[in-house]
Image (cartoon, helix red, strand yellow):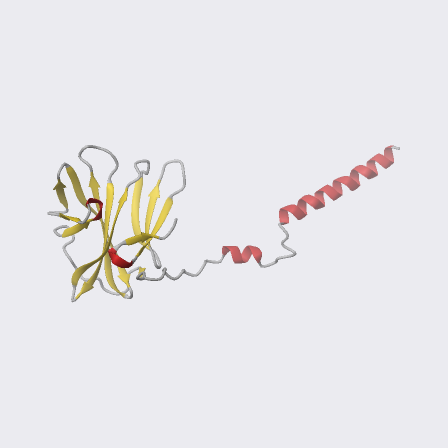
Length: 194
């Protein structure tokens, strides 16, 4: 009787071990290329119809004085902000020059400029983002965006990816949150998803 129980125990243990091994293997025998294809980088997606293609810089970007310039303020219904030495006072709000990001737009030189508008009455700041292309080394505004800053984020940075403008917000206890924008028609930067 003891020998039969020992044999049943060994057989059941062996079957359980095989079942666990098959479950952990995730069916690699049936789909040998599955894990490798998941790790491969995905090709960049084409921009939506009616949008321009923004990308990292290609070649030389013309020099411009970004700290003393007039910018669109899409948060104020078409108003403008004129910086002097990288700052401006608009009512009780304070606007400062932030990131100046070299880029290319449809293959030509471009720059993305990010201003930060901090309300004098308190509350979250707003990022005023403007995309410029160049005509004979003169910056020409192409698209703009006003997007509220997340007060919970410890840092926000903007960069240009392949086909999109990226806003990356960093937090203390959660992973970074990335939002993508593309230059759309009618002078607007459009959200293209997380």
